[in-house]
Image (cartoon, rainbow, N blue to C red):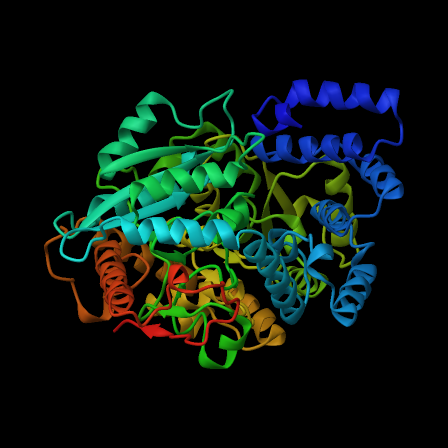
Length: 580
């Protein structure tokens, strides 16, 4: 287990296999081997070997685990196998009726978002999960809060802001590029910007020296937070102690549940104020002070799904940008041999749809809509990320059920460091799924540039696309009212491709306009202020938001844990803040 934790996956795997030979019914060895296979697939950007299925079934037969069972269902759905879906909903209903206790709520929130589960169940499980985490860390939280109260804060100087990022930040992706630009654009006379990277692998550093220098140049400081526990302290306690020593005023979490340490870490209250943004597209519970969002993503009628106060930016809470020396995506594609090969597979397709997410995030209703659209729109193709052979068979089978030739499903193999923007730039229209949409994927699509057809749902992860499109004045064209309208819009856009071509041109123009804009220059037009490409305006709104909540904190309108005998899991004062 220690080898697994520090990144020595092959050594850990070998030892788990030896343990299984000695004791065939040892649950810990089976579970550890499953986790290693899942972790390796995440690191290699690939799917687990097919042997994971019998291994997971054997592990569950030895000892039942809700968390492992949900992972099993997710892996099956990643292979486009919906066999467990009826059972999934039945189990979810049983859990709700049983009103499970903290001890049994071990289902990791990120698993819930990767499955098509009702929003109410997701909210309930997250609430229980976060309450459990908060309760187990309340003494540490009180101690950290008292320590921060005793150190000097930023009452009359720069606000010290820590952006907590995950391992995905190290990749050549839109989140990494956008955050670099965000760090650079902060007003250094008012803010001291620190980038904190959680490093879970002591064997291989996640950032090269060149990369560290690049990140350090974009912000005031880069802090590598090593996630190594000891017999006396857990990994999150060690990280929390490092952050407390930095005396952070505002911690902005961009990891969400991508890092297993994130929830326990935030429960330890290592900063004076804590807010979540982009990393986890749902409620993070009451361990944080705010959820950064916008009025369209979290309208008044859906506020009940969130335990924490909401911090609303005016138009959208998702921003992206392009560095001035960055080669535009459509130019980069023409210079790439791999992309030229992919283009050749699409040369006979008159209209190209695309989906760049995990197959587990596609439910049967959305797949039905896509196939109906492709059945009507002849000579269209659907771009998907490459899947393993056993998933490709399921994909082909589901396509044939609708009379769709499997050759119209064009797959692209994702490689380390590959840019999804190049892949998406080959599409005429990106299709979103019904749940768990990564906000960075939305931005990557729009940067490509490629418009996104969206059907807003109830949760934040089902509405971020709508906010981004609305900020760019594209909501009237690409937002559907219901599933039938979604199908009809997709058909209409494919039959009249000039609409998407104009939208692509407008997106490219808007991105170029904001790329060339100087930080100190005024916005180009009132209509474009605060849109998803306006990084300068977005950063200024963020700074205004940080100052607003800091003033509330300084005025004691936000309860401080250090002043209380116990931590209230239901604070009596809950303020939603709107930034105008």
